Length: 248
Ligand SMILES: Nc1ncnc2c1ncn2[C@@H]1O[C@H](COP(=O)(O)OP(=O)(O)OP(=O)(O)O)[C@@H](O)[C@H]1O
Ligand SMILES: [Mg+2]
Image (tube, rainbow, N blue to C red; front, side, top):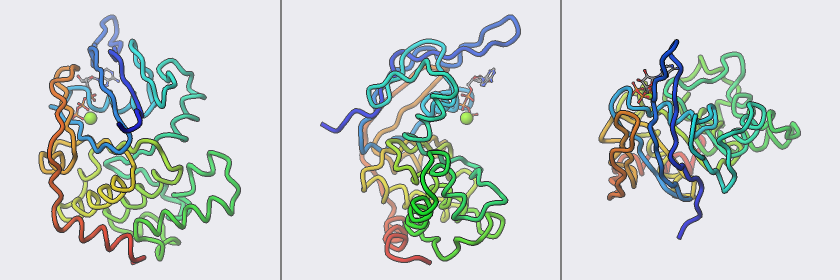
């Protein structure tokens, strides 16, 4: 049995709307294990982003417990949340969230700087990560000087810099064309093969089919949670071998 990475126990999240409380999550429970690749699906408004914010320790649940690597992280203050988030969780967003004035290498260094690593250590590590996503030759470029797919690869490199227990991706292919999206999925497959646990929010069945398990939310509740066959498009695996083997 793989190692338990996280456990959600009856997670509820209420948003205060004036006098009214709106319950966006009404009691969600599941476990994630090392090496899983999971799709989080559900209609608009079902609570996916709310759940991702809790999983990523950006926000605390109103009720329930979140155990990350056995530690209860559901009641931490902002300072401790930030520290644990940086150490254990990598984020990839639909709109990349790169810092526009920093070059690609400096962008990948950000979490390492925050964690207090020495300049040489973080530089070496950032170069390694850029190499992994096939962009080491462009390390001096600014985000504005690369394509959307390349930006997302830099975001993945940054997310991996701290060797996180969990990689969270909120619609990572949402702003990309199909082929570029497949390339990013190819990269996720390679990382997952290496043992990285990946959770992807997606509206696209084609993306969900490429994972090993699909969790579906509806109206703030877990509607279904199914393990299934993983369909890997041929093109994606070709692309990913290319990423690993070259630095183009
Ligand atoms: N800050 C907030 N204050 C009040 N209500 C909120 C807030 N954030 C989200 N909600 C409500 O909580 C519910 C869940 O929102 P959430 O953003 O988690 O949905 P989602 O599944 O990510 O949807 P989408 O697919 O459109 O991104 C929605 O009804 C939304 O209006
Ligand atoms: Mg959302």
